[in-house]
Length: 208
Image (cartoon, rainbow, N blue to C red; front, top):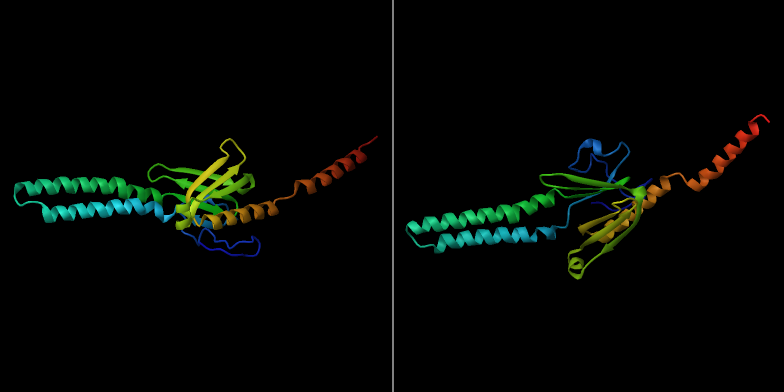
């Protein structure tokens, strides 16, 4: 991640070619730039790592303490198989889910992709974001992560991102992105008088 400013956006941006993003190339528009590409905080991997360490410890203890004889083979096979299933389900699978979860903030939208086997993706244009808020429990403050809630126009208006690393800075960056996007949009108040003036000129040009 990078934080800072760059002329034209008020942010330091990275193009899609500069950031390894696990998305098809046609997801980003021609003028769209990646600002942040995040996975959930690493603390979500603490339990899978603990399960893997525990499974290895059980297998090692079985090798050292199992009695000699025919029963030793049975004990080692049962414990080894159970440890393998436990590692695959409670350790490897959560790591794959973590790796397959992407929080992408670009100069045009917030894009969320989840799914290790099945794929789910949702994006919210910056112009549709109406509000955003962050929340940190005490334990999350210790780890430097938190929950980011994004409200937008539409039926599925609320998006909750859990375990966002450096959530305070991410929220600040999102605020800057939204403001920069609004600044680039033409002002409806400024266009209204022009349209009224054009309509008045048309009426004056109409034959009486």
